Image 1 (cartoon, rainbow over the protein chains, first blue to last red):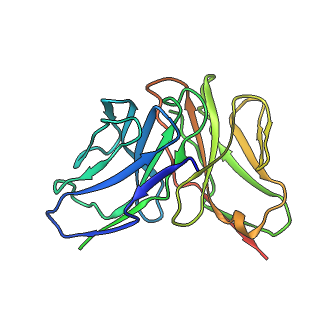
Image 2 (cartoon, chains in turn brown, red):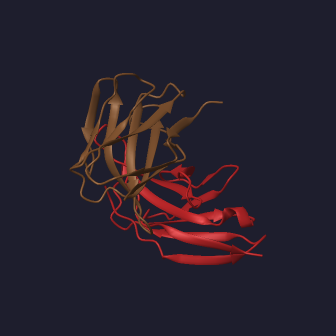
Length: 114
Length: 111
């Protein structure tokens, strides 16, 4: 089935460690996105990519990094510079960047910093 | 992007229609109204979107007022599985447009 796969579903890390969250899609979508969600809050955009080898900062990019070397993959690295990394991270894709249609979301990755 | 205002929560009885309101008084002429929902600890799911006219699909109906300053999402026969947070979002088309999710409205469907 076509869709978006995020892994791992749950992740624990110690303070000061970098961690990379995986996001893979087989929908042949050009655009991909990373959002962060804190308890009881809406989603905040971290980074987005409209095309391979290109990405833009969202509203809360500090402490995060991404790459888009392949159309299918958009990994997110949470670096030690992110002051409060414990959150629910959601990856999404769309056929083209918000030209038409909707975002398709993965099931999320829950990161806990110990 | 224009902002939206939604009540924090509402409930309805199973089998009845759920009418979820959204105010977007500063919406621009080229901005669409989108609705998503998020069931607890899952990724959001697209429901419907519209520009001016009312829209209907297999999940819901979207009613947009003539002045476009507000809209209502209607779930015609709510079930317990419709319990979720519903997000109303407005955005324009274009490469610089971002989809911004607020806190949404929590719908609780009671048996």
